[in-house]
Length: 409
Image (cartoon, rainbow, N blue to C red):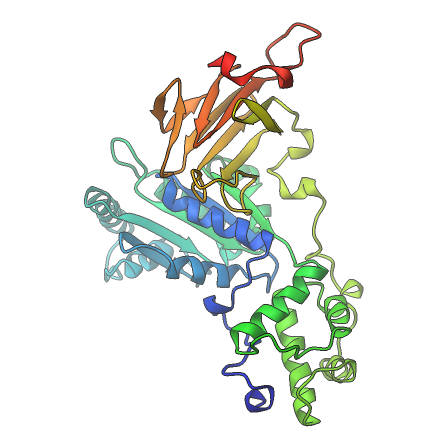
């Protein structure tokens, strides 16, 4: 192969989901954070969707590799199963041999196992890839599993990953009860033009390029044009380009090599094929019926008594933390990577601590979960968050943004 010619120690564009090659675009970082939230919450239930080749499986493998030892995982990849076969497969993943069990015995064994693991301080996680193939009856079993609980907490955390058809199923009236139990839903879109170039360079660097420019600058835009930013398509085209350059005994991929690869693959420009992986309008990345969502509240972020940022709150979730993949980033050493989240509904708003190091405080009392009321101030590290409920009538002429935060405490 071409490794010696390009001075690489491994193939940079393999199609296998290798976690070390994961490129965390803003979209992928967000999806990964949502997966991690299943560990933060005792009732974690996350749905991640994306087109074929968008990187869902690589994200799952990366997430699994970073799990702590106190997590017990069942990973299901074969999803064309009957309800009983699905439950048996879950038990097999947990180390049982349930094939002679009838369904009631399977359920009893699974329930007992989950409760025992919880008592022993272990987090049990069910990950289902290609979940769009699950039938409605199997998804109903998933709903029942999500309801197994101890006196205080849910016993099972769940991640469903699949193609966009999964959203269509979850939005069907028959699965309303399941959908209501989902904490977070996220659709993974394709890379943009700049991210596509960064993705290519990242994989080459991991493979040992050491900063060398293997692809000519003029090739990146055309690679994006023919792949639409879909990671799997990028891998296929780039690998074929490198093979073309290898055939010419050249250690730089040029537009001529790109043309040869496109001809060999018999590809047309991505826009001439499907647009399903195009970045959707912002509404499609929101929860169902988000187009009708309206601002129900605002938060003011203050530091040293001065307002530094203002954000509207609409029905949904806002994750707050130190890193850029959060909805609201607070760049401070006193803020954890994912510090807290605000869950907004039509008639309520709740702030929850995400097991942060320094916690969140209301009236000098550390809280894990707190129902926000108009005028509340939450201490987050060395910052303060004032909650302003837009549903509360207020006097004209008063601008809440000009209010001294400390007067509200």
